Amino acid sequence: MKWTDTLDIAIALTDAHPDIDPMSIRFTDLHAWVMALPDFDDSPDRSGEKILEAIQQAWIDERD
Image 1 (cartoon, rainbow, N blue to C red):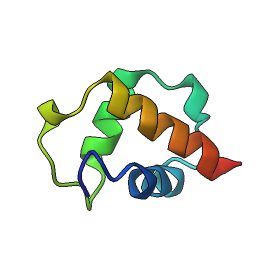
Image 2: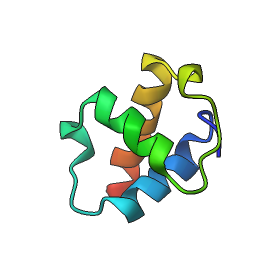
Image 3: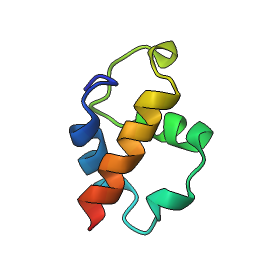
Image 4: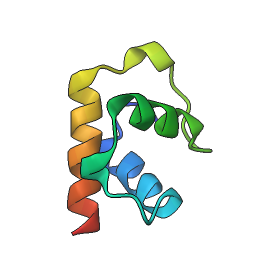
């Protein structure tokens, strides 16, 4: 997965952190959790606020 795979990342985060409310997570934690996903393979500095917001929104939508 790459930073632009927001839906795949959201699904993986839902599986990895089922008890976490994605609305309450800080972007620094979100960045670290994405980097820790086993199928994630992208540079840490390729993300930014817009990408993290898109991942967070996809995660919120995935949980609904």
